[in-house]
Image 1 (cartoon, each protein chain N blue to C red):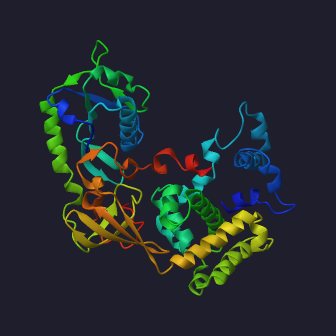
Image 2: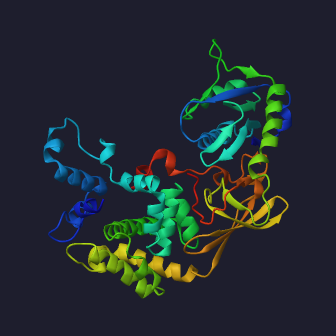
Image 3: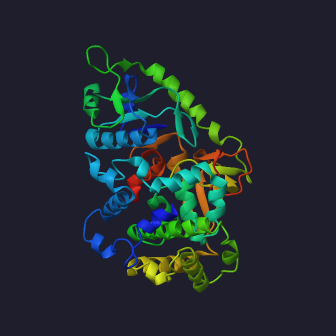
Length: 238
Length: 186
């Protein structure tokens, strides 16, 4: 999984430049296609159909972490526990419980607009995935660093450490997240975490939920909610 | 669960039609599509939909009968239900919907009403529970307060706590002492 991350690396002179890909729609698919081509150019060129993660589900790397969480939940929980608390919540709810990004976002960032909630959750998962790869490579020895962290600056330092020490060529946090919006979103997320750290969120569910007879015009979305576990992670991933 | 709209007294004694689930899609999502279709297509006409849930669990609802039941004033209107994915009318050799007498479905309603209590039976203050429906579904927590049919559940996330006020019927009592909110039976 760690090597998979390297293929999608956006560092200058290493891998594909993000700016080149971002010009095209569906650039994440392009990244995957390029990655697949690098793995096996012959296979990619000899196939009668387009080689992509959509055509060949076994090559879809987003399933690797799902398989890891399913097959070794205890190891998964122990490794994820090294990450910042908000990212832990995103991982546990998404990979273990099958909750969707929008459900997670609404719970963790209730005061934000739905689009922002979604952006935070996606960013948290992206950063968390990279950090998790580092944690796997380091054999889960990140716990000590996490225990000493209590401030936002320290948390950023942890992530920076995770990202730098795990790669052969060290890079800074800012180099890693080259996109300003990604860095900004993570910073905002940490602020949100600070604000909500000692607070409690109160949520009420409408009463008809528990009654046997339900009017057809009640808040049905409270009763019937989707889960990605049936459709698969890719359907909500892009 | 009985979902109904309009003046349902006008439907008394009218027959019901069954609708078979024809895919592996989540049952409750199919029912949601059916209700939205009914609200949109039948407009002000009364209708009743019986979603006969026997049990609720991690994997979703288990039904008392293999069909979802529905009745409206004019059965022919249900022929236009075809666009709903994963659902098809139970039809006879002549291609028309088979109509089932009200007595049979009333029996199912009675059973479903009794079953509704089962998955949340025994919940008291201090119980460990899982939220089964709604936007907080799958999360586990502890009942800190119980007032009639409404429970106050404390869910301890890693980053913060969530205090959820929810009807007891939306909760499943966990037999094990699940300490983490993401507890999942193996």
